[in-house]
Length: 108
Image 1: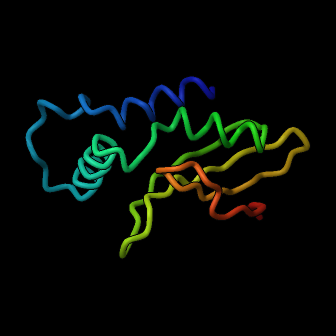
Image 2: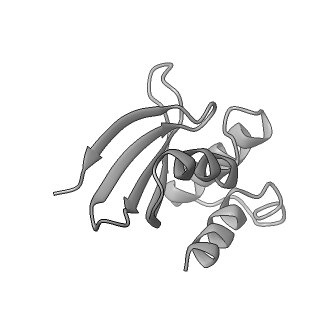
């Protein structure tokens, strides 16, 4: 399941995924375009790199990933949900540029 989710996420962040599609008025399409442009500029590291570092610190099964745009000069953030081997559900906010864990908490 991890590999399928990762492949899907990588496809979303691929610079070629929307190369030939016309512009859209849907807000999520604009968000996707902004994320793709930020990835091209080097403001966002690929999710595979981020997950490699995070899972070295917090081993477990990846449940969910969201990429959130930073506001007012703040970095882009990957929000991750992990299930640990002991059954805990962790929520992490990770700087999408450098992979640093910004926030860690147990999901209630």
